[in-house]
Length: 113
Length: 115
Image (tube, rainbow over all chains, first blue to last red; front, side, top):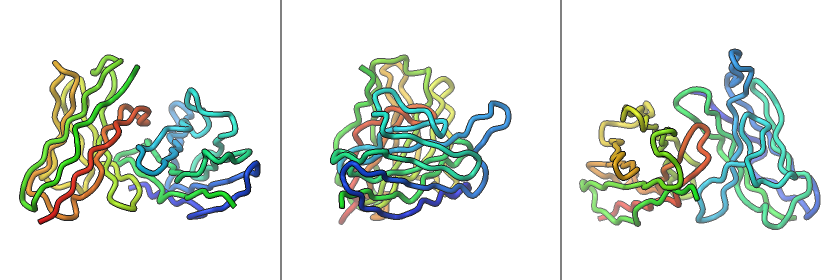
């Protein structure tokens, strides 16, 4: 199985400041045939299902604010929230959809400082 | 609009069975795979597997025993998850989610197993 490890487990950021979440996969999720990284980021708020923010490591889902961006390739990935807003308080998960079983990181809880 | 509507919460005793439904609307059901994901209280999501909505062929996560069965009724654009011989550790929110990566999710069905 591909193990996804996020860091940190939690972070507190002031409103308007940058939040950065890292995700490392135990093996590459870059598929050589299409040169795509099979890596997604989800946001989950209490009582709600996960919401897809980013796929192919850096493609923003329709309707997602542009303060959310994804980067990285191979085994190392980053989700950046450029200017944290109150509504961004949530748990964020990275997710590989390269191989079965699909796996998620353990989650990073983002709070307001 | 595209949506997945799941059945309501269930409270079951150990040893019982439960069948969760997930009805799709707003798109052609057979054009996207359907995943099942569970989330135990206070835990992260766990992918349980997926079902090919064209062929009905299911793929289960390796740790999932034969107690879990994915099925379809394409005539009503609905996917089902059946869990038999329920245990306390099956207590979780069960989500259906479309596609790879999963871009549309149901709101979840809470299954509570308690004597």
